[in-house]
Length: 116
Image 1 (spheres, rainbow, N blue to C red):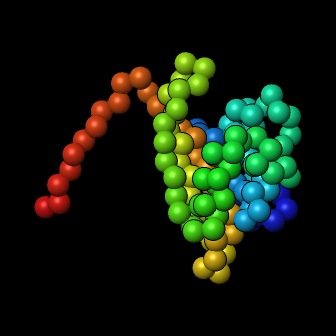
Image 2: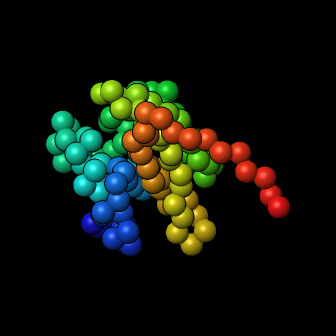
């Protein structure tokens, strides 16, 4: 896993984790991420921009340039998912993005909490 250290935490997570560098090159995919994108083959080392339409690629470039995060929900193959993309940093500088893709249950409680 050249170029990104410390990914042992992501191996067994029950969500897809994909990590790219500042240029959008895919550095790491945990097993769930590899299963999600299996139809594309092994895409580690490829650019994220090869797999995203222009509006999504523009958002990725914006996040990499500005160090911002992005969250949204999708429905794919009958499953609802929340996608959260956020920068990872090295020495305080944006070094790339991490994407978490989490399958949501059909019914999910929502709580409003107030500080005590």
